[in-house]
Length: 493
Image (cartoon, rainbow, N blue to C red; front, side, top):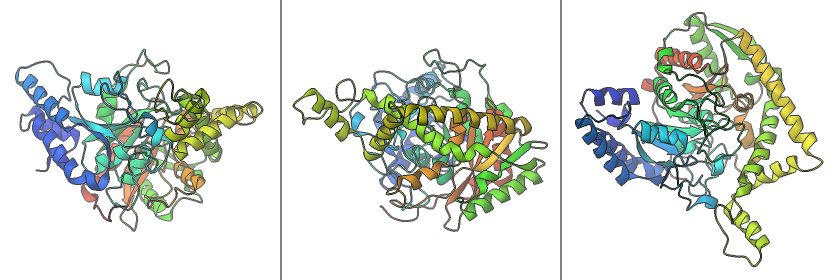
């Protein structure tokens, strides 16, 4: 039995039966990391010794019948934009290269302290979560386990690649415009973006505060439901956190979609969507029909404006949020200065990468005098129209079905020289963040190169249970995970 092949719910079952120890699980994953990390480069910070020490402590506490979390002793990986006390939180940026957080973010506290999971390390990402390929990291480029010459997606590329390569059993990511779902699609794993406000953002280094949301990246849908159940909930430290009752989302997994109303928007199947992606989605639609779901074509007319709306709002908020990193208050400080102005200019010029600078400049522009009304205010007005269009459709349908990504994983350098082409990678996902809705990406096929294709299911506010059940039912009836696994093709880039 290869421990690292097991899902979290399978690991927990063996832990509960005392067939395996937390130390054995942790060592198995650390050995897997030793084997695959030189090729994948998913970790910014590894915590091998701390992990083994913690696993031994948890095993001893279990023997002494001490009270522990339900998933105590299960390892996890954490995207490197979530604050972890006493451990580097770099956001994969030179600006925060040596920043050690003095506190745990709320979600980190829930999984590590309340649930007593074991942190295997901090995972690579696009710098400050700005990107769709994890090519924008200051430290390294993470590679896709299915083909090492291709990107894993982004910005949570390290999290998705680590799960796909069985280097962690599950991971936390963040999603601002598709940064959980898109890499999950490209790496053939499950990625869930919860409703805005369902999961606390306290301790998440902000990119765009009205769009960011933490969520799980997992091997299967049941693990996604489990991790969401653990991290969701109201938090007084987050003013955008919604106060709704805690829920066990695994109870929604019925393996039954009879009578489920599914809307398929024609706008998400037009030009720019790869034909192999369309074909895989069509097969998934036929499978849902076979399982008793009611599938109809619908229209999201405003969807074509969502991408422009997203980039205006996201860049404006990034410009504001990243203003604190000035060489004085936070982050990297240049050694090349004579005046205070030199410190500001040189620290930011040297500390930020090209993509972050691009978005700060664009965001500052749309917020500037004379352009605020023409761009930022207009984008917020269109955002309301996007929300209304989704609301109209979700009155008629339980879920909406779209591709997650218009293409499968592309090769390194293929889009990095053309920012606009890179931004189009998010065309299927950004509208969900603009509207604040929940969305999940699950694997639904492979292209001719053997690269995974993802299907996105979008639900109404706080209806995570509905999309999780729809995803679970599809998964149970197609057995994607059992049939297709990464092959580690290609060589180092």
